[in-house]
Length: 399
Image 1 (spheres, rainbow, N blue to C red):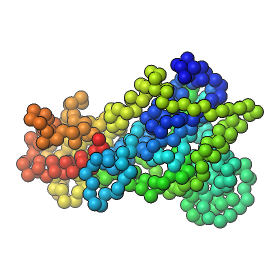
Image 2: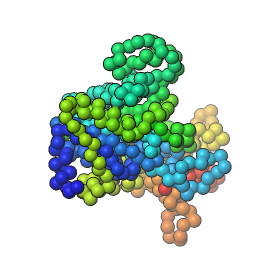
Image 3: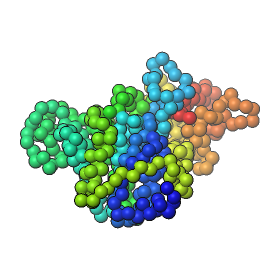
Image 4: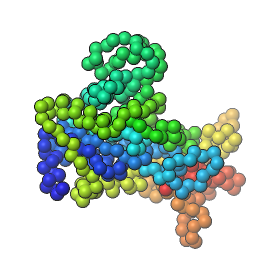
């Protein structure tokens, strides 16, 4: 496909695409290109499957949400550590919402539409109708705009057109907890466009180990975190073939927006990387700057360590050490010192493991990078804090 042909595709009033790539960076870049370049009054469906990857929301903290060492297949692994799947990508998407795990057992669906046609339920309801057309009569949209499967026995006979209740929905929310099978995330642009996407769990083989990836070992050491934290929900597989799901969603999308007309799913993929806008988005999503330095402010602290007599609070802004406050525990905590690191020169948390004290002579260790802090402490105090920070950094390091 040429650039002119792609531009012509994006100008059509109704469009439907499926990706042949399993690369999460590419698929999310294609999605963003469609959002920003498609005609302002167009309606677009995009379906894709990613290889194993953890996708965090635009305003989330990877150190809080993700077991970063588990993403690295070359990590030093203790016997008690979960085995993991090998290399797993970490991607910060451009939409809000919480953290999700992608693999070949789920299908990601995206609908892009004019802003004045957008509601938070509209396209989740589309997915529910598609699932029901495949015989999944337990599917409904809940109050959080997620797609869930009701559990338990028949409890009533609601209107079959009601996408917010099923025969298995218990009055008053009683009964077994529904299983979440597709979340929702959104992005609204200033150009009158709206994006709604979700990840539909069809037959993921990794449900049992997904919690291992979404439980950060650094969580006890993080406080005062700004941004969005994920809301945990019980999940389950729908046990539906991906081709059947994609066909059903495409049919429901066509029924909504082009009744009586054919809306074929056009296959797109790696060939779009030759276009500058897609390539630029791809490079941005793969960059450590986008992944880590977009993180909202938080505090990294050893306060939760009850044995620590000296407590340090590191304020992390845009992934960098910005400030440190040190105090001694006691009935009346006593502040020892405060240190401000220059805005553009504070060490980056995600690079600290690379600042190895055993590196070649002439290179800066991360202890040297935080030297203004250690200089104000007694030797024994600084050694304990260095030891804690070394262990903590290794728990929060991916690369």
